[in-house]
Length: 325
Image (cartoon, rainbow, N blue to C red; front, side):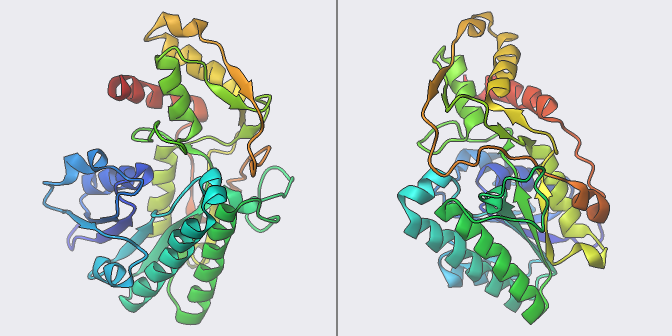
């Protein structure tokens, strides 16, 4: 790389952001991280702090001046900063909206003014809402089922308007249940896979919401990194100013997920085989089934996901075993 490309990763101390940071630093890019550490962690970026091509800005996307500072001399923005979690947005819709909509708009305006080459942002499968059709296809969505889903859909609308009005190139990546190393197992809004892993390792019974037949397109982090790179670097004019499902393209029920987790963890500790599962009530705002079509990404971005759910789960379990014990 002759002239080093600079990437801004917002939410760069979070699960997905820190994985993107690690990948692009290894590939020789300059990476600027913007994070307010509300859900990100210093431990996620500890290994990068002394890297000559890494810069940390501690700040909040709700502050426009911070956003302007962060995009200075940046070529590409990978916008991951958001308050995730459907239940969190139901409990506190105002803060979710301030961060996910107000903060998003701040970043879009700052990126437009700084003339960044492309703005790639984390969209969400929650945008499909009450649409029952499977698999989910990008141009067919339903009514949102949570404040979080509304905020992520508004992001897409803003990105589309900014592309048409100001000419800034945008690509939205609708993430489907991403999992992998550095995903936080603790806290009220922890994602299901790291939470279940930690409970199994403590011989505690994981609680499945409902009968366990709800299904998800669980997507390993390396597939998400691949999609961000393809979206950032594509030269195909038909591939920009649109949204893509970011997934593997298969669905797994929560019951099947637990079977896999128990099996893979039992290789490290045979006692985990005997840990039973508890079923609780369904969760408000949950979509029963989620499955992505990744055909559009295959055709326009040449996306070929490298990791199936099982392959990714084996990798993730190994990492959790070493780092969560």
